[in-house]
Image 1 (tube, rainbow, N blue to C red):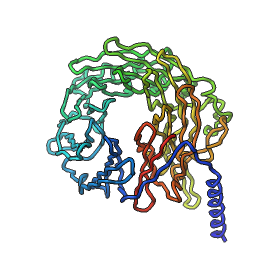
Image 2: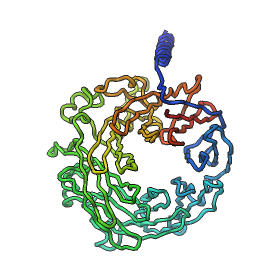
Image 3: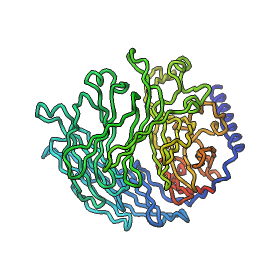
Length: 538
């Protein structure tokens, strides 16, 4: 009898889903074209690049093999397929830790621990996007025992013509230097030739600063963003919620030994999430979100969202004006009842708009700026299993609302919008969640996966969650650049892209802009075939 009930329940759910899908009117502002299937690539690495008139994909397959595919973006056909057996198996050269495009090359970065010589080796090999020729391995760094464990990173300049290899140095044996953090900065060009390198010391003691972000600009200068506290006691007390701190931008030129330091003044607001960017003219920009702290007397303070800021840094003139903007009431109090916060906490915590991180900065020819941010955080929750008889905790990821603001060339705020979204990740990676920004036909498009129940939800109602094991719809928020008006449009059902064809393993990060009106998406049919989908905005 129990199985009968389960079957009946499943039948009812399936019938409801089919009924719901039949009554969903897809947007007429997009055309969807599905290409022919080709053999799948089953691996964790999938990188797509638009180069000249082709689309090129790099993917690992069966763990150690590399598959290079060349596609025609017009016909959506695979026109060339190269398989390099054992490409990722050469452990003598190290473990692959990063894949990035630099110039017309795709750079594969490996790290090897040389136990015999007690040193770390950084090896690089490249693949040319022009002729798909694979280079030999090249050792770019050999680092002795001065490197700190696992403190290593790789970043590309904003124009993708240079890259940075940064690693943290072990504390100095010198009693005074031991109080400061030290790093090795190594900048390379697109041909993997070293431009410059330097070992640097952050000019503040570890006990009074917290490092936030770093980057290099298109000329190869190095930037470091840090939070500086009033004193050691301020940092120890509540390092993430202490207003007795300031944000400073540190710049280091190629031929300099000392930092140029600029303080970013935002009055008595607490700077929460920050990031470094660069505009088309070469100026560096720092953006971040602002908050006010309350409940400071208790063990855990609460950061209430207030607004955001951005500031320009010019190499010749230094830090220019810091622009600060408060979130409007319509942004903070968008929902009449936000079900994402437990009812008993709503009056205490105020609007749920925390953990907003600036993700995209878009520059126009008219020198206006589009700032885009997303609410993102990890949280723990307990799951009880009656059948197994135990409770365990799991860490989930939340991808919530998107914030978009347009700032005019004179620094004034043209418009801002808060776009509802609620995505949760428990079981799989987060690559299918979040969103992808693409500018098409003079408008702003934010593509993401959503629950169909949110399509016609009232503006003042909080969105329903989409979990990572649920198949949703590919949606798009379409924003008018001039006045900020928005429409929400369903493009297709991932469970039925075209005549019953499923699109599984959807990866938001791999949405690729093809032209001024088109994007490309790769799909998996659930068996052993991949295919391409081209979406054109009318």
